Length: 212
Image 1: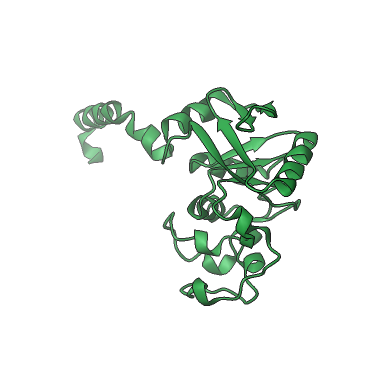
Image 2: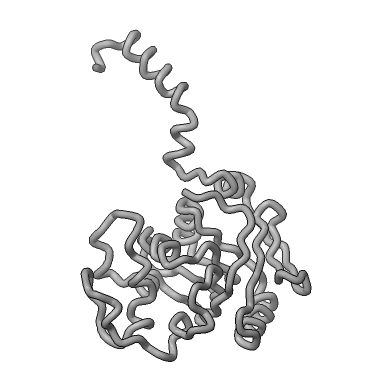
């Protein structure tokens, strides 16, 4: 996965609490286990006025003009603001896949569902936790100022406006930070011990040949 170090990006405000994973990526799109291709159907039931199905040409579907991600001022956003308990519901890993494929690199919310929170880190999506009053200020700024952007510095663990007028520090477990900074998913972490694994397998085969 791509390393996450410093990201400056446009902010989109999704002012809803308890957004579940079926809203993030509806169940009919879960037939694929590839990590790409889900972005066009992110928040499908909210972005479009018809029912989406796999294989549909989204360019010909009627968009919901009132949904935040369809507003021209928020197109191309890389940072998503949300309210409490984001990512609740089922444990589908397709939810962070869809958010990443759409173009989001980070989320900012007061809280997340546990499984969704863990799945984000495994896929290189940074879920930042900030207090409610910080989210209130960020939502106000994103709604009032077109082109509102933030800079997220993972090494310093800060969220700030590019001019530094507003800044917050967020907490992050050291191992998760290390993985994001270096672009290490679980497979990459395992491959980092490839020599030790090969040595173990060679020794095991020599000592216990009947297991082969």
